[in-house]
Image (tube, rainbow, N blue to C red):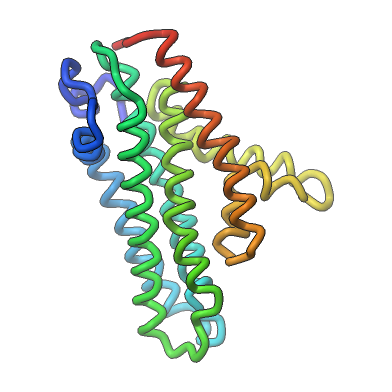
Length: 238
């Protein structure tokens, strides 16, 4: 994910200016196509592995979908990083909103895909009552992947090179989660960190949605707001 690689950019004189263009740019480079393929492969392989390794009594939609979505959310932000890096390097004025909208749409589709593959894996298992909280958990996938993608775009706007920004999408959230877990109860983790909120969201807990929203505002919204300010203040750079 070398920022200076020719494969990492679309032509600099044609930055994303519409939602359609932004959607096409998600798979416009080799690195983004590889990341997308790896993410989809994770979403296919993990449900299969869990369906054959978990004891029948533990095979539920939540027990398969939760780790599947969590693992996919590791690679999804890196696509956002590369999309944001393209905007940062553009030589002409760029519009951030279409890229963010396209990123969210793609991430939501990935989340829906993970829910679908998990459901198919559950159907193929001998579990007798696997669908507890299935609707909540299934809807959580697109929410989780959307916020993960926006963490990537935000850090992609703020940090360089892209490799550092991709690493930051893992190190910063997990670091914050670990630090906030130092108090005995760790009560702040699900309200202030993506990993903490994701655990409750994917567990189907009613409070998980409120926690995800708080974290989305803080991380997804905050990072992209700072990134937009930086993009406007610094101007196009190579």
